[in-house]
Length: 132
Image (cartoon, rainbow, N blue to C red; front, side, top):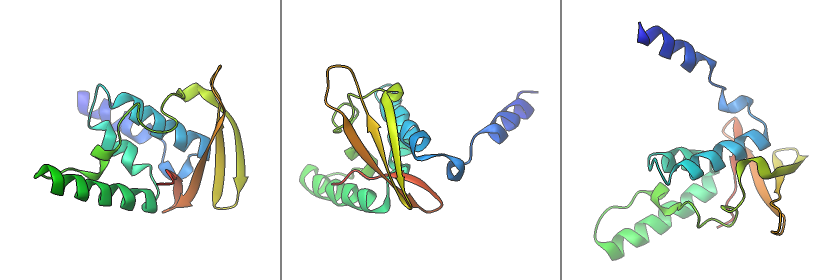
């Protein structure tokens, strides 16, 4: 009885390729925010990153692992509260500027300077560019 309900809910989930730059950034920020209580969400956030950002995090994880003496996953390099826009909550998206396969999403929180997050169309969907 529960299985049909779960399948129906899964079918209603948005295809990542159908999300706008704003929605993709919201998905990334939501996963990053949830990771403080659900560490598996770091992998979800990592999946929203562009290939170059993922490669940079992989290199950092390899360096950290060599120093720590044990394996560290690339997504564990993402830390909620440590990214340059971690203080910006999901509803803070104020403006989107599209430029073909690039987009720039502006975030604004009262009392803090505005930040512009670069997004890149890659692999059939919008992805966050960390600029590492």
